[in-house]
Amino acid sequence: MIAAVARRLEGRPGRVLLAIGAACIVAYLAALVVFPKRDGRIVIGDAVHYYVYLRSAVFDGDLHFHNDYVRLYGISHPDSETEWMYEPLPSGYIRNMMPIGPAIVWAPLFLIVTLGVSAARLAGIAYPLDGYARAFQASAGVSGILAATMGAWLAYRAARMLFDGRSSLWAVVAAWLGTSAIYYSLVSPTYSHAASMLATSVFVYFWLARPIAPEDDRLHVDRFALWGAAAGFAALVRWQDAVLLAAPAVDIASGILRGPGAPGRRVVRGLARALVCGIAAVLVFAPQIFVWELFYGQPFVVPQGDTFMRWTDAALGKVLFSDFHGLFSWTPLAVVAVAGLFLLVRRDARAGWGLLLVFGASWYANAAAADWWAGEAFGARRFVSCFPIFVLGLSAVFDRLRARPAAIAALVCVPVVLNLLLLFQYQVFMKGWRDIAPYPMGAWNLWVERFIVPIRVAARLFG
Image (cartoon, rainbow, N blue to C red):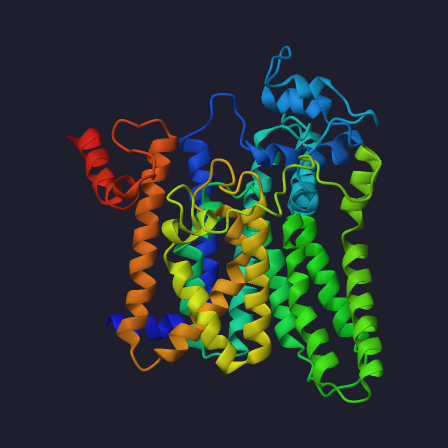
């Protein structure tokens, strides 16, 4: 019976992914009602900094964020933690160290809510038309979940170019529910990670969909422009996702090394392709350049400061293996996914080496950040950008196991259950029940307590 159900699901991949996304939206909105924050806020933490771009641009017609920060943080007077809101930059603007991309992704639904509230007010329904009310803030979260869902679908479509439906679908389900991606698609969709699932999946889909043979001597301006634009969009959402440009670099290098014509001609052709790709990326990234120029007087800047990126002192081991948000220690499924990329190399060298290069660049960039643990996070949240890469790696593993459906089921179900148990433990801790749910740090708390915490919670609620 289980096998029959699995086969039915495999024949309806769109419905499966849509159902997961819809369940996330329902659970998210229900949580906003059942567990409202005392101050009425929905966007918190980093999300505030993404949100003020959108709210200020739509309702104030500017990017002066002082009033937005004061209102969202509920500040009555400055203190040591909020004095930065009262200290404008030399340009007169209040600093914002987050990218503008998530606000752009959220804008369509935010504008729909704005129009809906305007119409309701005309009909005599009193509701604040200020961009701060809960409907406006909730639209950012719903937009994040929709973005994650679309990203999952595109990752599936990308995997289907190389693998069968069974391998591709269960790879997406495992990568979505068995990694940190589910937390940022359900609990914190107003962070940038849900939007990055969409942005990076857009890139991977288009890059895989339009390959170039090494012996092809045409410039292919359209393809390199498309890939550059997609990478620019991803960088607009999360700056470090500019590492996606490493994938078309594989095409450029392959053309230079193995393409037709004299070496000099191959180099010129490669440089022309790189120029087209780079220009397209910069053009799409232009809104962020405009903001940086406006705020800091420079087109490119690291707002966190020059010491934030420690390129010569990257925590390469810790970002993967530390019990404090390490990728592999919190998300062992990622080990399988990365291993699968080497299988992908054997299936499609271009795809395999390109995605391995992107993952390696992402690993280094995340390890080089001064806070390589990414602050308070459910696992290694910055690696959520690698979602489509993990999907392709898992697809390669599942394809190798296609004659053993029980093994595929185990590789999907076990990591998903383990991850959801850890998510539950983490949320119970974050909700304040810290006497029965320890923080997932240290071997026991990270790997054993997840099985015990549900029992303790049930005892407290029903005992």
